[in-house]
Length: 417
View 1 (cartoon, one colour):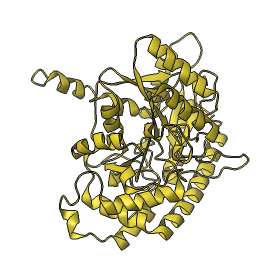
View 2 (cartoon, rainbow, N blue to C red; view 1 turned 90 degrees about the vertical axis):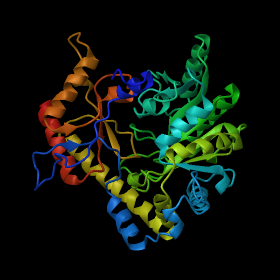
View 3 (spheres, helix red, strand yellow; view 1 turned 135 degrees about the vertical axis):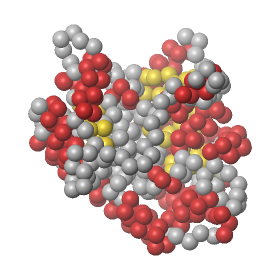
């Protein structure tokens, strides 16, 4: 790689294996020995409904084949999404098209926000046990950093967590680090929980007091579901809470998760800061959304009755799939985090299988992960999510029943349960 720039060599170290072409994936009839993958957090349960709707209703204006209205989202799409946010997120301030900027996915927007909020070597505060790709989104091309917060025995969704964030913030400052923002995922990936109103108020106050931005990734906002036998958290958007500094609050949302439309590659920034939009919009041209995708999303968002029915069905299907999957886990005596009621994942607690004997527990987790791989199960380990303890794995429960059941059977065989 000596003929690459130093920057290019650094990018190449971020190994990406393209899944192009036929893959050896499990199918109960056609390929029963294939790989069971729990790698991608997608709402496979609702994809048929989205595809059916688009195949029936898609109408492309002639402008969709051109550059049309530029790189930041058409007015029609912005108006449709603004109406959606006003309907489902209960913002304290009415959201309009001017509060929105679009890009080719939330991943692109996280990098764009990092570029306009942080200089090189400056940091974003983020909790431990968190979506692992935030690290690549924030750091790969920006030379900015993440400062991870360790919670120990404190529930990271409780109001007490605000003090933990503040302590880490002050310690970072004392060490000469400059913290420019706090990034949260609400509802949370991979823990599947939503933050309480009280906790969010505390985090908003923290951001205001220390003049740092609060970035809230709310891409699973409407992927909440009922669970039997306990009260579940309800989703609260930071947009629905009063704050002294609304210009410091930025929400990320899109079509990939709630709408089961990851292939649309559409994400939007919702912010009340004209300065942030003024900085982000010129550089969205490097990750501009497709005109065809925007036309499709506009069609979906503008059909209020379809959206309402879609989310009602999604919640029911997610709840039913979660119940079926946890029943299989209980039968297999595989422990897991029982507090989740959002998103598409279950956080397996396999810490007892990597503990003891004075060995390196993270190495033991890596070995266990390899054993799952050899058994034909593709499932990310806790180290990928900056977990504080070794032995955790993220299982996706929204895959087809046959795939989930087969995957758990193979996991069970590895564990000997």
